[in-house]
Image (cartoon, one colour):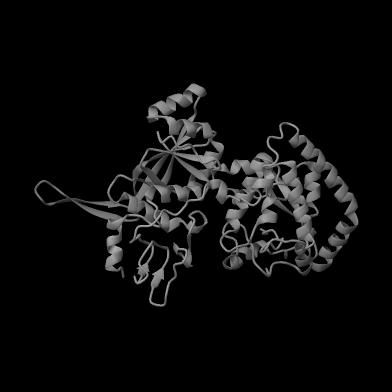
Length: 481
């Protein structure tokens, strides 16, 4: 039940946490690494972004980037015009049509959802194109300037979504409500807000008392403390009192500031970095296989005694460029582990396609020991030796996981995957963050890779294995599929 004060809030300000619709909209897209660039604004793209929405001055859009990520990744287009399709009605519908004489002419039946085009938005993957867009006074001039630099390839695809305009009455409130429905963690981007309850967000310092009845998704704006809140989401309780706008973090702040300083110390390694790293990988993996051969043999015997054959498990993963390879590990799960995934899905602690279950019943007795000390990864030195992997790099992942990544996932596939990486040493295991952190840290590694960063990751991995200086929440285990 909505209070009278809450009903009047839209008329008072139309703001939430001091932010207007454009600021909320741009903050939402920043949360997935996308920079919103407006035509003729003179404001260039966020330095931390790799994908850019080229928008008109008051344009606002809401759609699921994952629907088109596969196309954006592989079509090679400089610009992609995304036609936003709004599905207005679902399933079977009947409509009575009357003739000029007022009598029923026919009954029209529809067995499919009605679709209508809500609008269009342009997605760019070149920073230079976004900069041209921001400095141009018209769409035509912007496209002409881009074509003046090179041959421009433009593609077009459809995607379910909606377009709004900040200057159209009611649209600012509608777009914020639409974003609140789908944005699970605004507190990670907007400074000064926090989660008050499951799906309920408000200002830091606010709290719900025993008289408030709130069901998320729900955003609570600046309000008088005496206001009683009775809201069932999805809903917005708008600012009822003026307040200073909350600061929105830049994309470079959202995506791992902790390793940013050290990884920026080396810039532009030129042509020597990759071949030198490959030579180091080959040498270290060969030495590791020789030195660890007695341990590898002992582990193989233990795995066989505990649960029989096979001793090794080769999961199909994607290597550099998307090539499929077998990523080898000692088998740590029961032989019917894959069949149990669906049954155990409710216990999954990851927020993406991975599976991570504490005290996982699929894991064998020997497997628990191997996982605790990451000894199950030893066979991957063979993958490094033959060139499928590197010692340090993004987590190797299969195609069915990569399809969940944003459009800029090609960065993950531009380098060899690693036995260890930035995600493995930096993840927090915080509820609802594992999938986002995996993408965040893997992409950050590719963008900021350097010999110093590789060395820091390698040393931290050894420390984690020895339980020295382990980060809170980082249990050293990798989600198994």
